[in-house]
Image (cartoon, rainbow, N blue to C red; front, top):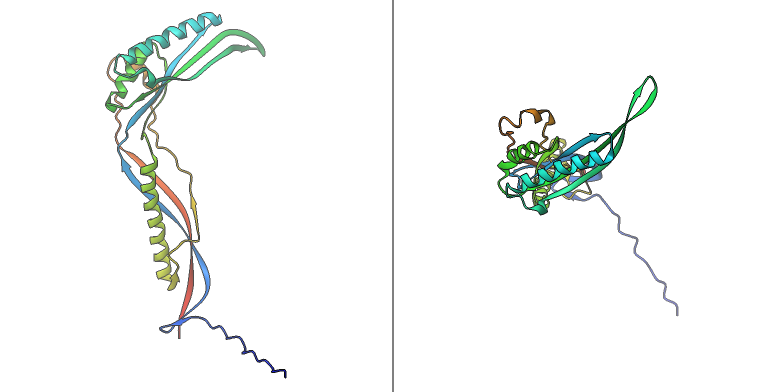
Length: 237
């Protein structure tokens, strides 16, 4: 004997209702969060060297080698270990003059750039630049104050950026009278840049008179995030 089977109709779904509030389809709020912290630099990175020119390549190279050797010796006497004095760039180029549309060979140019790292006594950066220039360096590209490891500091700034973004989204949601989901559905980290303190090469002529006033000061570590939150509208009944 076959017994007929019966199936209850599926239960109907209704919008969630709590305390007189009905939530509807989700929308999005996009905000930018920024986190900034002030830190003390831990090392100075100096880029300088010598550029020489001569009619023959041998002459240009010899003069350059003499200048760089004197620079390294002078800087080493300021308690900078040799491992912290490294070649950053070395180039040999030919030089030409153009007169009335004619190209005339003029000679050779040799450039040798050093990177000098100062991990102790950052206030000596100016003294090191002066010593290098007074002993043969004729180009100073930059003096940067940096951190040995930026990761920990950057993570602090990143946490502040995320909190800043959430605070902004919550303020917007409150103003719009909507229900904000506190967990962002999308986070985009913006490109980070290392702060740089530039050194102007125009000051080279005055270096032999007084110490170049280069001071570390403080650095700003910054993180930026683009954060997308969702929200639901609520209607009182």
